[in-house]
Image (cartoon, helix red, strand yellow):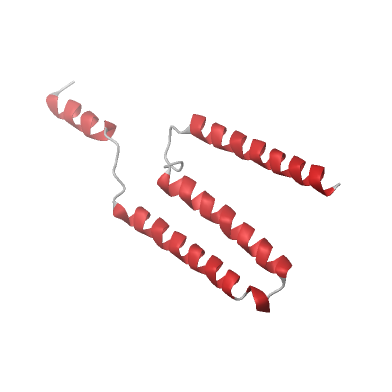
Amino acid sequence: MSAEQAKSQEIKGRPVHEGPRNHLLAFLISIILTALAFLTVIYADYLDSFFVWGFLIILAVFQAGIQAIFWMHLKDRGNLHQRIFIVGGAFIAFTVILAGVYWVWW
């Protein structure tokens, strides 16, 4: 292998830094979701309580997804173990919440 081929192979092997664009986009989306949640709570007297709770839960799930994808870098390759543990933890948390609601409600 020549020196130029080795140099090009070295450059290809380095991880590419995505820059601040994705971080700023994720931050902006997070701010918008937080503002929507605040507005929903502020105007909760004028809205149906079922809508308020459902909308807040949807916003929370979406916010958690944005945080996991952008800030925890789950969109990058090589994070299979992290994804498995996060999905497993979410499944366990969901099961515990459902069991708690079932236990208290009935």
